[in-house]
Image (cartoon, rainbow, N blue to C red; front, side, top):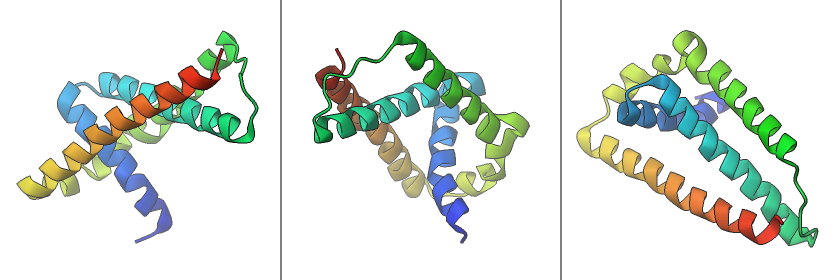
Length: 126
């Protein structure tokens, strides 16, 4: 299995779980973008906290710009041309147990990652 496929498969599976939950691709894309933004912001704040460069002064323009870039990339790599559907038949063939465990892992990572990122952001950004 190629490195790109190893990296993209969990990303696409996360989107697949969100599409199954929200029914619409655009809602799943929106949730995915919010989660990705929280992760990126959490990483930036974590690095700032680790290096002692706090508090961060981040403008609203930068927040909007980063969010739009993340949204555009998600649209391009997943939604445009239904690229995520290349994996759909494989994901649909997962056993019920494997599907349930993977879905729980996705939702757990969204909740834990989201709360972790929010707490880091609240600690660092003023």
